[in-house]
Image (cartoon, one colour):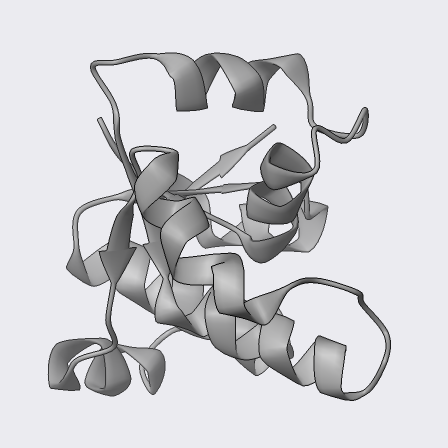
Length: 126
């Protein structure tokens, strides 16, 4: 299965945070799954670091993605165009783009955000 990690799931994984649900841990460690981390998450993380809402070594971000066997996912025109067609169940632009990417990439967004579950099969609520 192709999975895109929501930003908080990705950070919880990297920090070995107790908030990471067992279901998410199982999905991420299952070798049959392709795990993607979107540039959207890097963007969101860098903004939060700049605003001092998060402490994270940004210089290590790309190597952490590769080192964990994850694949980076860029934003392309298809993602941007899909963004404008998805329902406004969630107002966070980062989360909405992750949903758009999930839809275009035939992937599922792994999240703990219940509001995102309204997007249906594009989301895997853990």
